[in-house]
Amino acid sequence: MAFRFRPVDATFYDLFSASAQHLVTGAGLLAEMLAEGADREAVAQRMRDAEHAADETTHEIVRRVNSTFITPFDREDIYALASGLDDVMDLMDEAVDEILLYEIDNLPSELSTLVEVLQQCAELTADAMPRLRSMKDLSEYWIEINRLENTGDKAFRRILAKLFSGQFQALEVLKLKDVVESLEGAVDAFETVANIVEQIAVKES
Image (tube, rainbow, N blue to C red):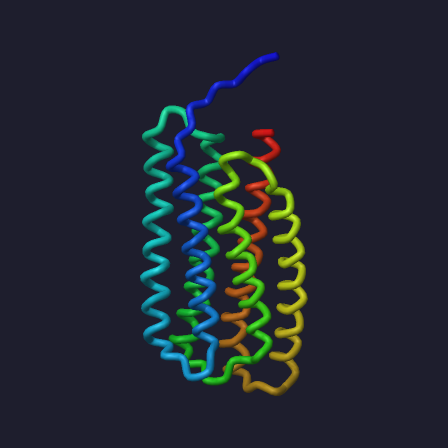
């Protein structure tokens, strides 16, 4: 039997865990942005700060890959996972920014379903990242993320149907459609992250 010795650099696992925690923060801020009476300027500033912190974590992962001779798993997978996590945060930040800049007063209640899906995806991802060390018990993660992505797709279609039902003015439709597409894009990005985790787990098993 061939044995593979690979020195463990725990820093990568810690950085991925930190990156996922940024997503938990971002999803929580999204929920705050939708809350009645929210100070949107303040929430948007906190989201910008959270997005900046997430970027710093992503940059640190890239710097460490570029300076580490032996990585815990394939470099291209590390780059892909770091980029995937960063994409989720960017899309959540985009949605918050659109709500603020477009000065949308009335947000359809159905948007909360998409945000709840994002919050669940963020919590699951934060829970899964530390398990990259052992590559154990990860299959439930990508299965559940896939289920949530399907839930998000259904919510997205229902919201679009409502937007085009005639209840909204044309300009409102355009503004809200951008927000909804950003939220749906974030849900899709979570599924991309889960798919990358699955690929890594298969390779390393």
